Length: 523
Image 1 (cartoon, one colour):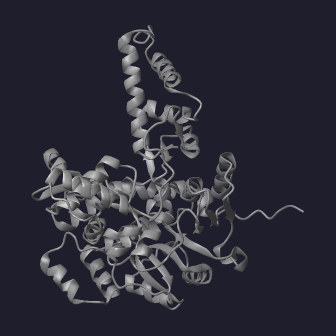
Image 2 (cartoon, rainbow, N blue to C red; image 1 turned 60 degrees about the vertical axis):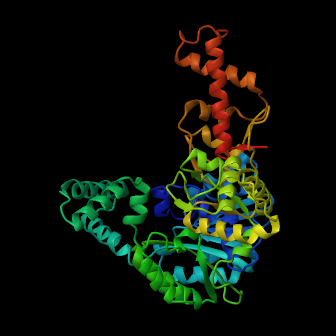
Image 3 (spheres, helix red, strand yellow; image 1 turned 180 degrees about the horizontal axis):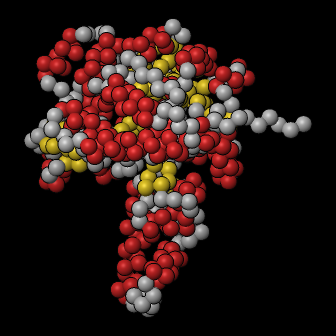
């Protein structure tokens, strides 16, 4: 008897671009849970379910980096799932399975999960399926489990809906998917190029249209031109979740709950709302004109703290790319210093222990440090530079509160467990098997920090492919020399030339250090 072949979906016809989403990693979700008083499962010993998993681009990197955990994905589209299953087989992973099917088919045999992820799904399915997603979370979440659901939110989505309606009008009567995409982009380009940008409406319209033009065809087809695209207010989402026995925990990106960037009077007004977190979040959406949310839910019976608890920070690992704007200030804590991250987050602090902690974290990046170790090193650093030793235990509450503030501002990262990475390249360096495989097909790979990394340097990309642990530096240098020589025969004709040897060695070490810093090397 032949197996039933499912009918193709729109995602089989037009592929949706798939990436890793750092904010969905159980190590990141668990942090938010702990800060608000939950006791979620550790990322390295948990069960994860992803609804709408696509080709596994988000779930497979988790499974490869967390071999002690179990991962299950389901998606209605057969082609992406088949692609992901091939990737799993090629990598030899045994802790993950992807299944083609409807989420309504998930029954009690699937068991309970510590984390349920539904990214980019809720707003794009019929109302009945949205209700089923909540029922599923209630039924399959562990008592201390967390559900991640992202969705288009109001009021910001009103602006996007306006452009969506224009596109749908323009492509009315066109059934062919590639032609619908082509016509939608043609209209977007026409509107963008027609804006002289004189008033506020035109300025906004031009900026929004240009953002849409940067999207890939799959995004246009499945987002702007989708059959369903239903945004809602945050309070409506939470009320609907509440009817299914679920409650709001927080946002996956913690900084989205902060009031940074608003006037003092605005912050004071939000504070007056008091303990009503839900109302405060709704007014934050009004202030930010928020169009997209990534909300975490848990069981209604779980006892949550009303605010993030600084004492929970002592159980976490901490990392930061923040650098002091002054090199002198980084070495010698003292007056107020300005710190910034590559993503543009910034803060000013005159807290000497905090300055010392940021200096320590910069030295250890990308390796996260357990809070206790960071506190010890920060106290030591402060004593050496300021000559004012303090009791280590007494420093912990102040440092924890300071780091929580920086977490809200986007200057530090918290994790619940150490990712399996190598901070420096070993004698025979090893890249993660997944990154090596991905590098053979393109320049975007997944790091052990669960981030999509674009390896634009040709040598770096080939190094990823070569780093299987069998080659030492002389062997790798020879591979680089051969690569250079293939590009420029005359310049690299003499392999013994001192300048050539030095250039290759420098190229190798720089690329190995960069790959380690990106979380692509494993021990």
